[in-house]
Length: 93
Image (cartoon, rainbow, N blue to C red):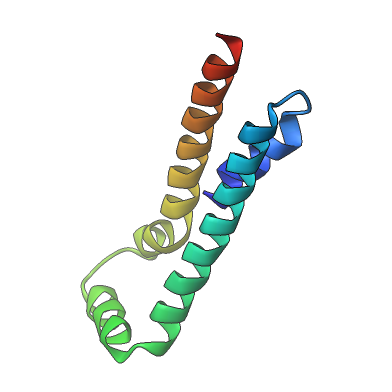
C-alpha cells in the first residue's frame, strides 16, 4: 500500500488535493502495516514456530524465498496499479 501511494505521489503532478491526501494516507497505512507485520514476525513466538514448521516441510529454497519476499511485493505492485487506474478514471470524469 505504501508503494501504491508513493507511485501516485511520484507520478501525479496534476492530482486533485484529495487524491494527494489519499495517496499520503496509503503511504502511512502501508508503512504502519509493514512495521506491524515485521514486529509480529520477529517478536511473537507463535509466528516464529509457525515459520519454523513451514520451513521444516520439504520446500525448495526458491519457493521459500518467493513466499517470504516476492509475493508481498508483487501483491503491492498489483494493488498500486489498480488504485492508480481507479483514481485516474475518477479524475477524468
